[in-house]
Image (cartoon, rainbow, N blue to C red):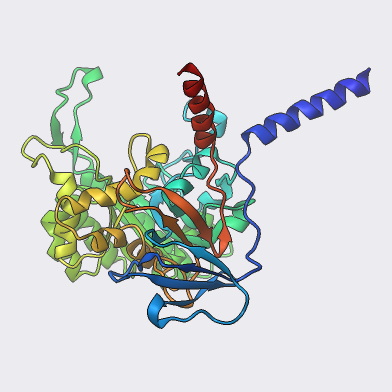
Length: 436
């Protein structure tokens, strides 16, 4: 009886595991294939009508107009895509996919660590490839992302992954790409629960907080330049910022904070800096351009923060920065950010309605983030020699009405576009039909 009970328990647990598991990752590409007839949106501003794209061993070997690009003689699979569109896989910058599954379930939340200074905390170790939230990204063309920790003054270290893997070792594209800092706010809101006026007021601790951060970086420099025999993991984790092997991402929104953050990075001789959020980045766009600072721009679909802000402040900011020559990518952080990451292409589409061309908007979620993340040699655009991480859509991928995927590939591996959502859709569609 005991053995029978144990067997039943194992079968039950197996059923639960299979029921909640992600789609099985696609196998490695074994046969060449060609996508023929589609409009190819390269990701660098160019478009090829009636294109031919040949993929071999996970990489693009040929791309060009169908009329002048004959297919090679080797046996290949042909994907007829006349009237459809091909895009590079979209990239989620400053994302937290895979770190939280259900916000209300503490055991599934691995978003942040206790403490103020945590540069040694590596998000990739906590990344969960079995997340059902991740698989829901793929039907919208979101195939790559940066996994970023949150919390504290220095949140930790991010990594870049692809969204179809067995484990984090399989998923990782670029390990420990950068350090994330939350810049002190020069203003704060009154604590209404203590009877304070809830309006904005100067942060009296601002200079002290900036000084503490500066001291921490200086101490790290001294440690890394010295010959200390005592291991200090947090200081050691910052070493890459000073030798150029890691990127510094500073979350800052207001004009003063952005300016001070850039000057701080210059004083610390940090080579690579990106401002994350950048709500008032438009006010210092020329300053950012002059200092070669890129921006991960806050979620486009958000309300104005201040009484005198334009109603469309968030919508038009991307164009202001692009016009100034700043390298810009979009990021989805904020309320329900993991779920909203699947709306990344539609955030880009909104910038088209407020001044950018579709080609420019596409770059905000393809080649631009690839450049900032340092993966543009392999990802971010459809070019010979680059990874075949791309998808085919029946229509405009930046429009939620027409972004309907028929095929998606990561490194030439054809992905399943099935998700828990598509299963539910089919299930309840049948119920609806039965009711009729």
